Length: 232
Ligand code: PRP
Ligand code: URA
Image (cartoon, rainbow, N blue to C red):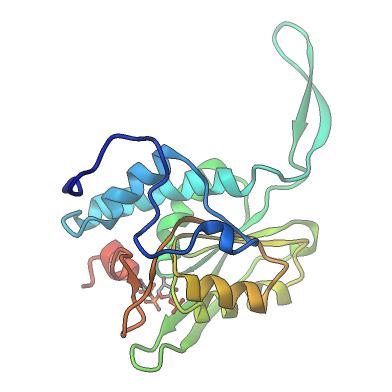
């Protein structure tokens, strides 16, 4: 990882050159978090090997899931500590976690470390490299979603085609609410997802500049599925 010319150690968020300000999308949250930026820097680095890439994706999955659940409604309970009774607050039910295959599996591992009782769904989508249209090859969602919300996990929000399709699948199962969590988002994908599903908040570690001619996010991090599973 090389320091950019003229860089300083200032604490400010580092938007990609040319990226719109995150405030351009009211439905998008980009947390101002040094640890997220630190891990994302290593994830972007093309020299990062697959095993480290997978570990970083899992760590980002845990951090982003914590952010995505920050304001969920809670119930008041009383718990007995070894010393006294304490007032506490708990989630009525852990939300369902839905991984968009394959790359979403990397985020899922970390998300499950902080929501260990969450039921898990899988949606298999693959993007045609020429048309950039997603095609679906598997859907497995747990029953009983009406009692809880769902967090859809996919590290890359590029054109938004896969995210729009995945969220539609999840909504059809009737969860109480849906949130979408990714690592790197392109403005095109955010706009398309929020236009199709304005009720679904989007959380990203970074809003990047845009897409290249092949539909890859720039600067992005390359092909997340290939880097995660060593298939490049
Ligand atoms: C990647 C990524 C998203 C999708 C984003 O998956 O994980 O699912 O592309 O692109 P879009 O926003 O333009 O739809 P890919 O189809 O490469 O499958 P993979 O995870 O199995 O590699
Ligand atoms: N899918 C990826 O894995 N990376 C991109 O930049 C775009 C789609």
